[in-house]
Length: 179
Image 1 (spheres, rainbow, N blue to C red):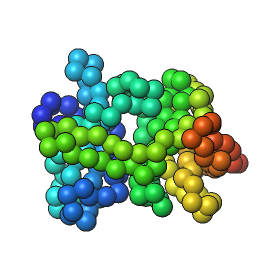
Image 2: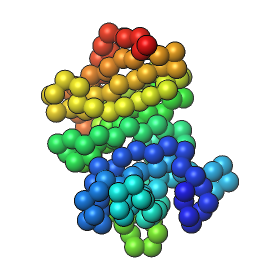
Image 3: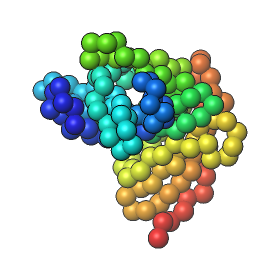
């Protein structure tokens, strides 16, 4: 829970690093409410399974807004450090941030630095997903996605052709029914 604003996290993801040197992975959380707005929180792992809110992140979403409640995040540890997919269900915008690093401003706020890649402007637009996970599924060093629909259909999506100037390539694999 965000002790400074009283907001419970809407979603939580592994930050895969500790900026305070504990060696334990910290957490990122989407927090906020309709009155004060939405933002990312950084939670420090002080001891195993104990986290304290370190700071609210002031970095905007990929579309330049602060509507973090509209974005689903999925993280992984990769060759860049931490990678994070950001997906907006209503627009289908899908981005990958690589080399994500949190920075504490020392005043209860912080920022993220990263390299941004646009994967697709309309991936799975309007689709309900019960799970979105990031992983390097084919071992090529580029993060990929697993998505599961509410009716239990799982599908891998392989990402390739990352570019700073245009959309990447995302290829759906054969769907599988979870039982």
